[in-house]
Image (cartoon, rainbow, N blue to C red; front, side, top):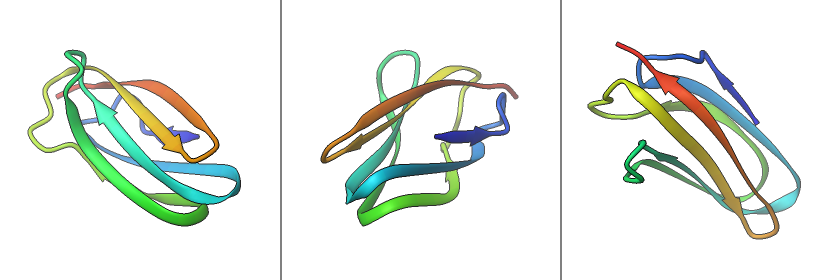
Length: 80
């Protein structure tokens, strides 16, 4: 997983590479545990793109990737 820039303003680039093709979802949660963004990906072993969190409030967030055979998470910071 690669997330940049960190800290950011709620718009950031993200890439993930998995060991095999599978369905997965990229989720962003705020510090209160509310889901703020969701990107579903089907039958892929990697994904790269921009993620935008609407109406982002400064603070810590968790980016989580949940796949058929894998999962991982990364903490990042949003500043204004």
